[in-house]
Amino acid sequence: MNGPFETGSLTVDRMSRLQISGNVIPVSWYKTIRKPTGKPNLNAIIILADIVYWYRAVEIRDEMTGQLIGLRKKFHSDMLQRSYQQLADQFGITKRDATNAVVELEKLGVVRRVFRTVEVKGQTVSNVLFLDLNVTVLEHLTYPKEAETGTPEARGRCPPDTVSPKSDATEKLFLHTIYSSVKHINILYLVLLCAK
Image (cartoon, rainbow, N blue to C red):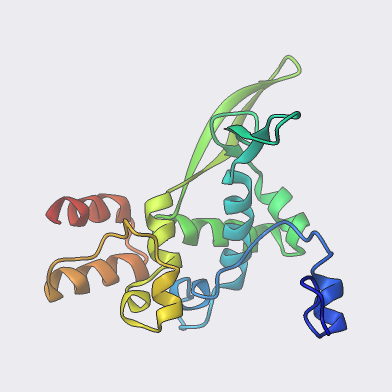
């Protein structure tokens, strides 16, 4: 007979003891983050997963009670600072591929590139890349419209405050905005949210 912490599968039992952490890639991104050819943009997907990892808060717990007492960010500035070369080295891709992937994420509206001049050890460094995450667009890429009408499992994963367009015309414009590489997607997206 299996105990409460035994599944009947030795492999599953052993896996449950591993504390694997890091980047998470929702399956929906393979459908919502695509190249013009229609294939998933794998470089953009893995880079977005890394950006999302950095923007997930760290829990601060009371040492005595274990109670959650706060949250903190993982990076020092107000936005995540990453260079194209860092991304390229981390994922084993070229700097050009990393740059193209970040540009595509910006076209989708899920990431915004900000270039700043910063002081590092008394030296002024210009054009330092910071990446801002648009959580509203991220929600729509992660929980697309199909999830609302799909399987119960998919519906169960949708956040309760998911914005849904009012009409078919609005829905078509909404989907076109999300899936296309429109340069000013954030403005169009805000218009759609205001139309709700």
